[in-house]
Length: 157
Image 1 (cartoon, one colour):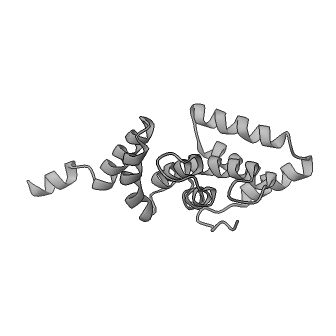
Image 2: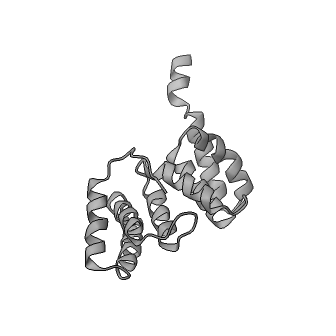
């Protein structure tokens, strides 16, 4: 019976992530941070992405673009499309990192490729908006960077 209980019971991390994401969705950012920080410390990509967003916008935590960049990077290298898109937007805005349209395009291109449905459409529109600010040569470089990117590769600011 104990074995069955272990198999049937959801992992504690999944519960914490569900609670943290639900708190985030309802705007209870203090509670979200309490649930997400321990997961982020263990490298959970979803938790890292949500915390990045919270630090970028100062939701429940002090606004800190550099911290947002760090959280997004740690999730983006794991292939999390949300974090990849948000990282791309940081590069576009130059928040917490140098302004770089090519890197913005690369990360939004990766996010669009990894996402589905509405999320994919949103990331594609954002990528195309970045492309409208770039030369054809810059777009080619951004595409090549996306095509050659290997998950797990560290990001240098």
